[in-house]
Amino acid sequence: MQFQLNGRAVDVDAEPEMPLLWLLRDVLQLTGTKYGCGIAACGACTVRVDGQPVRSCVTPASAVAGKRVQTIEGLGAPGKPHALQAAWIAEQVPQCGYCQSGMLMAAAALLERKPRPTDADIDEAIANLCRCGTYQRVRVAIRRAAGGPR
Image 1 (cartoon, one colour):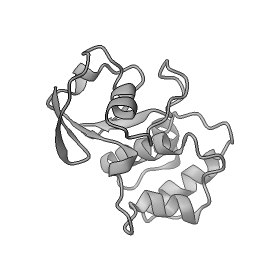
Image 2 (cartoon, rainbow, N blue to C red):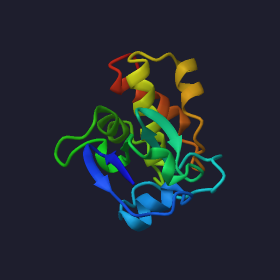
Image 3 (cartoon, helix red, strand yellow):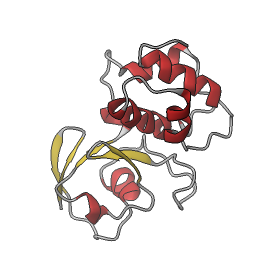
C-alpha cells in the first residue's frame, strides 16, 4: 500500500484491515500518535488524512491508500515548531501530555479550515478527551496560534 506520510511517499506491506494507529506505531515506528480507547471516543489517536482529523484507532490502513497522512511527527520541525506547538508551550497546555498529539492534530485541521476560529468553533472541533482538564488552556493556545485575542 502506498500513501504520503508527513510529506514523504511510503510503501508498506500491511493487512488492509489493520488499524492505521498500529500501522503508524508498530510498523512505521511513529509513536507520537497515542492509543487511548480503541473506539474513536477519546481522540488521542487523531491524525490528519488529506487534511481532515481522523481517529486512527478505527481507520483501516486500506483507507489511506493514495492519500496524505500527517502525524504529530510531521506537524513541526526540530527548531521550527508549528505555531500550535509554540502556543501549546507558551500557554502551558500539557499536564500529563498523553492526549496532546491528538489535540494538536485536531487543532491544526481546525486552523486550516478556519484560520480565525471562535470559541464555539474550537469547542466543536476539539472533541478530544483530556483527563487533566486543560480545555481552557487549549482554547487559549488555539487563539494564540491563530493570532487572535487570548
